[in-house]
Image: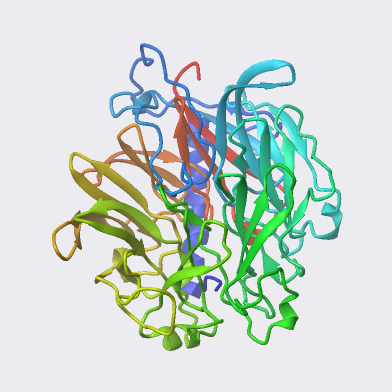
Length: 515
């Protein structure tokens, strides 16, 4: 499941880290050691300050919405015309945020109405930040953090805001989902809160973003880097009000409908570990996940498969499993290194795109995932296979943008970034409209611009999405699976690598003047 790095790639990463730091120092004139942000200068040739009001808004979860489109507000205040007026505010934290931030507009914290950024660090510290100053508003610290802080036992889960905007849900490396009061940072404790979704957090990792569907929080589990057994992928539904775990679906031993002790199942692995975690289908609320390496038998074990579950996760509705599943499993070429990306209905088809480590994208028909319908021992059935950017493994979440009568999918990996266009008809197809050799994490599109964090070179790259036309490159620090959000006149980018096991980290906030 883990990413392998060659000696040459490691050398290159060291070199680009040095270059990124040098570029950053030039851009911001150095950075202070205070936990508050240091205000940086605008990039060279900065234009005049933006005029007119900047629209505010919420970015409440990973990739903006429950379907994980990666497409945020239509207007953010940031445009191609004012990109060079952006200024940098760097925030220092008590941990590394190897995931994505969320932001809320006009909430009450500390007796004041303000905007707030929420992040969770790799060791489960959940922190509220004032985006306009970089000041820390509160920090939730798990009571048992001393047992695992500094160890390989981590989380990469992006937190999520309750629809009532009063609570935040966050994961901690001890296998718990916690409910935190937004106004104070205090944890809700009750008969079921915090909610446990693994019986062995030393082997089963909460590595994916949390989601919400109706009254339930949807969370998934996988394994740690190195694939040390035993573990299984779980889909867990938690009642938002009570904290009671209402349903568990296991990707191995799926005939057992409860949270199992990993060693009690004869099969191991089949992690659900793609950045987006569980994807919620609009309209039906059915749940889509993809699994990584593990055994597959088409009945109770579902390694290297795309799976559609009922909204309550009580039953598997249908599956798609590639014809070479056994080879993928044997070669550590996880299908589930990314989650399914939902496309708008086209020519009567419900479609999704699935990537993976094999360097291929699969176009899937959700009306008949495996070409036959239902769940069972059927392999293949996809509509199309097409190469990923640079034919590299995909460990990111695509962005899906429907505009001007066209659907475009933007995908980044360690070998490049590409724009794909969907063509309808009796047999839908994808084609590559543009691509480059610039790596990136999960792209997002907001305010008509495409943002891609190049974690290797430590740069936030901004494009005109049509044709991937570069507009500006904003210096940052290097990272891993971190990805940006853009809302309210701000680009918010966490940095750092969870696998460094650091107890400190940074977030860069590029903002319009006065934001």
